[in-house]
Length: 210
Image (cartoon, rainbow, N blue to C red):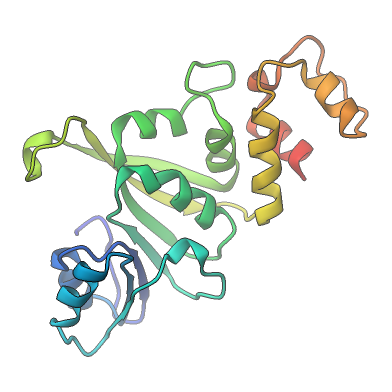
């Protein structure tokens, strides 16, 4: 919670209310908290909190478009981490604090040509400054998961469109093809030498995707 450093004038958008433990803490520190929970049972449980500056929403946050917030906090299943980063890449906000699977954090910080370099790597690297804050061990959870976790601070650098994101994912479906050949098929005259798509820098990928 200390990593968020919330102010009384700020609006927090939370993805995944869960049991509401983190939500309550944020409500005591922020001006307003809007928390999304898709699970009906957890949503009904969270409604019992009845906190004045809390708005609970029983919908999938990542299908929402017209939302204004200052701080994003993610307490999601790890399977939704990619959705969260792609959604944030098209949003305006001040900062985000997210907990992800340690392997996913390593993927975000990968470099061109690395084993874990993916479309989400290029999107995140292009759109955000990513600062690993600390690791969270398995023993911090009940039930105990099979993976380690990492808490990240995300600061936006630039925004892209949802079409931009779709195109980046499409490019990486051809990750082992020569980048110049892929660009030519897209009607773009660009010389990347012998480099494959997965060897391009994030700015180069996002330039093609735009």
